[in-house]
Image (cartoon, rainbow, N blue to C red; front, side, top):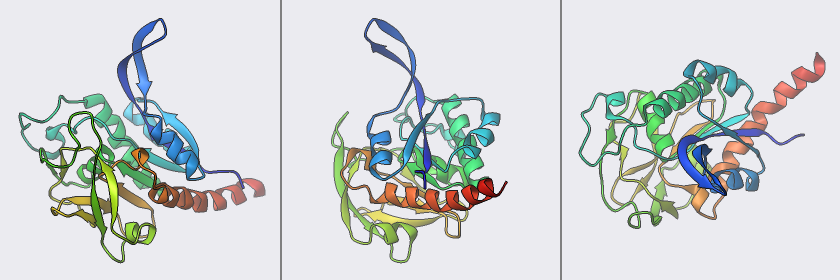
Amino acid sequence: MSKPLIGISTYLEPATWGVWDMPAALLPAGYPRLVQAAGGLAAMVPPDAPPCAEDVVARLDGLVIAGGADVEPVRYGAEPDPRTGPPARERDAWELALIGAALASGTPLLGICRGMQLLNVAHGGTLVQHLDGHTGGRGVIGRHAVRPVPGTRYASAVPEETGVPTYHHQAADRIGDGLVVSAYAADGTPEALELPGEHWVLGVQWHPEMGEDPRVMRALVAAAALGRAPLRERQLQT
């Protein structure tokens, strides 16, 4: 059986390489490397118009919403805190459309850092706009322990308390409708959210692509492979 195709959202940023200085669709290399190490095929998904999200997700076996800029507070009905970063409105709209398409189609979905926060907002949740102690300093990945909640999807993939690479100053506040917290930091910060039920949906607040533990991504790839098998059977029969 061929490997499942895992799409990873990217973002447009000014970039310089060689003789070029122009906008580029960027993604830290840790994301595709982690997908590949977990047994999947990685596909970078550049920003597009939100109505295109359904067609994009239909071509994928699984989807990762990558980390990055703060979600604009208007998305969850809040005024911006002075410490909240500048809005990335087009990215917010595109990635929320991707999340909506994945949820509607049952496509396995993993949100990483910002991706988990967007998952919460997509379900009507809110965010804490600033907290301390979850980075190693400006531009430096920190590390802290995460404790799984027994009986959750996350705990089935990573059953023990473990140290994770972390870099965020925002977090889930009011948990979105239907979501449950499946891991906590020692200070009580929700570190993983998931949607119970048949469809594989998980968000983690840390950055597994910056660490050495592939288990969360392996779980996504495994779910994507399971969903791919019936599709391949139908294609072979037609």
